[in-house]
Length: 307
Image 1 (tube, rainbow, N blue to C red):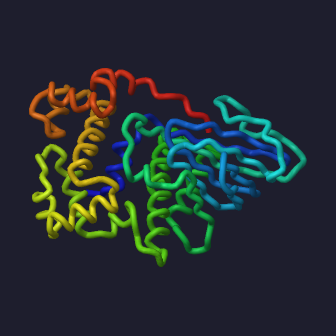
Image 2: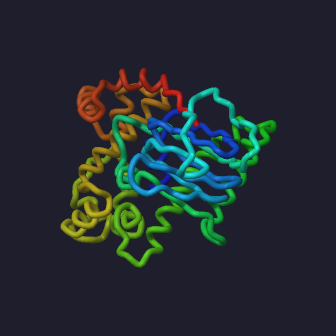
Image 3: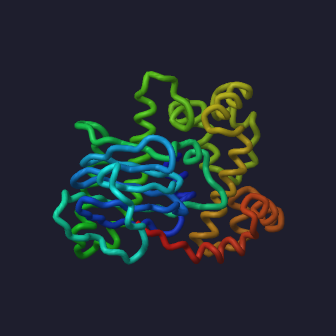
């Protein structure tokens, strides 16, 4: 079981969006909060990302910056440039001018809004992956492929672009976790969970069999360590105790099945470990604040995300 792929598949909703953005200096553009995650890749020129607070990020050609929770921010060609635009659907992708040209590839992913996942919760608001020779070749190749498809759409691009966007999200996260693992500091968080054989084994077991009535002794047997050791290491890296994560994964799996399949509530209940539709509906409403049927109907109306 690929934990990262399964996790992203469970929290991803709707269709990803992307587009080219070209401006000539001076320029400044505001990006409001989006109900998901967003990214920018600098294809030509340079710019600055200015968050609401904290230090700004200088971005050069090939740099990737990722906002795992869709934080609001501004993009400007220079720190003293005025912000005169706001990202919105239907705006011009390119505005001619005589100043220095900056081209960016921008994109957004809709993520489940009512129930998050600790893998994303622990990430910083902004992840900057500078372009460095020899670093993250898969990410660089995916960026190049996506940029080519968006810049010059061809037959099949409508199918290719969403698929490449899905791959890009995984490679961004993989690059970030690789960066964390490469530091001299102790590996913590989900990078630590992936690197810890016992925790990773327990996670794989939960992901593979969400319907199983898991206990800490069961998971410690799978992990090959004592109950106390697993509970301590699991909580330290994943961010919550093993059985709390079991419940979270069951609900995320149920939400995914409600969004993506026509399975009956009783069938979904059995797949996530509940013996009755009533017990499942009660647990789901406790976690999501609405009944499964309401959630399914609302999932058919994804929000419009501007990139």
